[in-house]
Image (cartoon, rainbow, N blue to C red; front, side):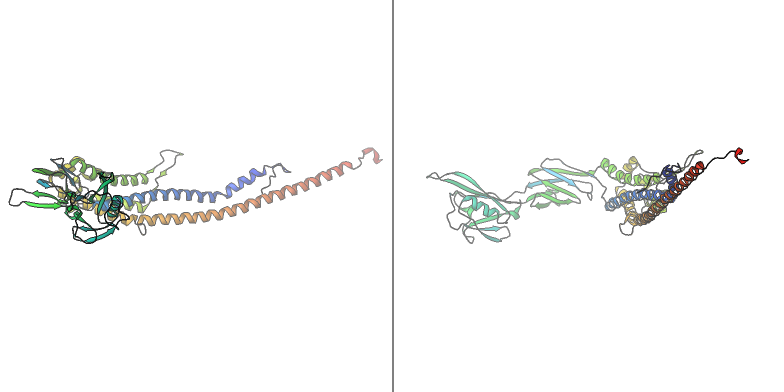
Amino acid sequence: MALSLDGLVSGMDTTAVIKALMDVESIPRNLLSAKKDDKNVIISNLQSLNSAIQDLATKAKAATVPGSLSRWTATSSSPSATVTAGADAAPVSADVVVDAVAQRHGIVTSAFSTWPADPPILTLENAAGELREITAASGSAQDVARAITASGFGVTATAVPSGEDASGTTLYRLQVTADEPGADGTFRIFRGSGTSTDLAAEPGAAVITTGADARIRLWAGTAAEQTLTSGSGTFTGLFPGVDLTVVAASTDPLTITVSTDIAAQKTSHGDFVKQLAGILTRIDNGSKATVADGPGKDTTLGVFTGDSTVRALRGALADAIQHPVGGISPSTVGVSIDRYGALSFDADKFATALADDPASVDAVFSGIAARVQEVSERYSDKYDGLLTSRITGQEREVRSLGDQIGSWDVRLAQRKTTLERTYAQLETMLGRLKSQSDYLGSQLAALPKTSSGDAS
């Protein structure tokens, strides 16, 4: 514990003297601490930039796929059909005749109060002719329905009340429906083992719906007429990147149309360019230096000022964006960098280029994205990225500075202890000297006094 010796003997403000001396001694340590704080700020900004570059690499990788930034408007002339267009779609207009829609297979059994056989055994057969024998827990309609549903055969059974018999006992029918629509979902259920007694063929039973595929015709009435079927009712890839789902049949053809959504494509392509522009602006702002404009004022450096890795990243991204792709300048599709290095997107020029030659626009953006992906991954790879290595190097410096600061803290603590001991000893010595002085003064005062007259 530090001792407070202020004014004990000497009257000096010992605490203030020691503090002043320690302030001078601490200057190298404080400089190291300030340098560490600056390094931490740099690391934080580099890490944030690296995260942004990693996200850019992910977005750029997705954008390298031709058509990934394309957007389409898909419409149908009838509410009974829904059209969806993916990124790889192409403009198309076609008439489609919907001859049939997909439906689930379903049967209803004859009415019964309890299953006539014990144990209640049933045999299920699917559209492929595969058989599965099941046994219900009891002869109740509910247990039989549960056993059918739990069979894993792709059907669901429900016990439906169907009046009473002559004795007042409640009767039930089993309604069994395929889980999936289409011809592949058809099934039969037989009483007992084997396939001799079809439940749907018994008196009072019926097949209520027959599983069937949806069926459409393209180019109906022409020599090129083509019939297509779908068990689900969705015709995937009817045209490249275009899916059609039908829910109602119609003798009249319906028209499906897929066209370029200019507004949406402006947004998707513009957002990609905007993300790139944001990173370039971020680097530019972090690299600015404010020069002192008068006496007593400081020159302020940006967090990236003088960082060769960040400067090289900025140059590589700019080159990836502005260089021609397949002999086509990005500026012709609305992407340009001005003489100040600012990246911009001209939506109107993009729309004009898209209307004139959508394939070229797509190729240019895919090419830019591929180059941006390469640059982004080269700098932000989590193992050996150039920016990642830069961050790792800065973190090593911070750890080294922390070690040096720790050594200085030990050294300064020892120095303070030494100063406190020195000044304590000084006060003790001064105390002794003062005691001796006081003693001598008292002794001198006690000596007999003589006058000049006594000398005769």
